Image (cartoon, rainbow, N blue to C red; front, side):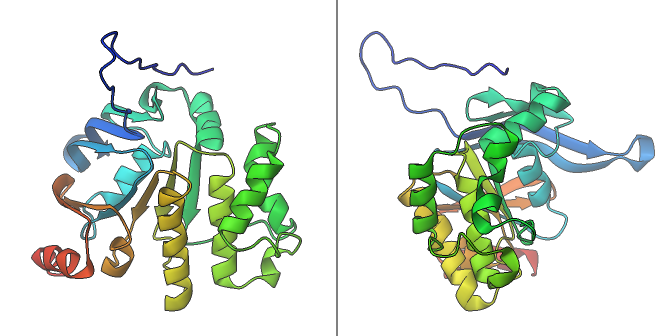
Length: 258
C-alpha cells in the first residue's frame, strides 16, 4: 500500500490552498548511454491544479509525450520526482506503480482500446473489476449520462461509431474517480464533429465533475478548450498561455515553424 501525504490547515485557521493534482519537480529523462544518450526532458518543473484542463503542446521531439507518460506513471524519470494525487509515484516499485495506475489514473488515447467481446458497460467498469473494487452504480449512471451514452451501455464496441467509442473510453477513464485523466491526441482518429463533442466532454469533466484533465495535442483548436496550454521545446518548458484561444496558440506555434 502506498502512503499519501496529508496536508492540514495551519492552526491559525488561515486558508491552506489545495495541493496540485500533478506536480513534477526538476524532471530529467534520458535514453541510452554514453555518447548515444538522448535527453528527452531536461529539468522540467510543472504544477497542474486539481479540477483543471491542461493541454501540452510542442514541436515533434519536444518531449511532450514523454512528459505525459512520466506524469501518468507510464514511465519513470531518470531524476526528479513526480507526485500524482499526493503520492510520489516516481519512488514506487513496478508492481506498486501498476496498481496505482489502475486505481488512480485514467487514460484516453487515440485508439479507444475497448475489448470487442465485452459490452460497453463491462468495458467501462473493467478497471474497477481488475482492481477488485465494487462498482458505484450511482456514479456509473452519472458518468454514462454525462458522456451521453446511457442508452448504449448494453451494446458492444463494434456497434458504436468512433465518437461513441471514445465517449465510452472517457467514461472508463472517469469511473474510478482518478487523480487525473491523461489524453494522448484523444481526438486524432475522429472527424471534426466527433472531435468537438469529445473535447467538450473533457472540458465538462474538468468543470462539472471536478476532474483533472491533461491532454497532449498538436491541434490548436483542441488546445483552445483547455484552461491552460503548456509549451515544450527541446525538452524544456517554453512558455504557457492561460485562458487560451486559437489565435494566441497559433501565434506561439508559429515560433516552431510548424
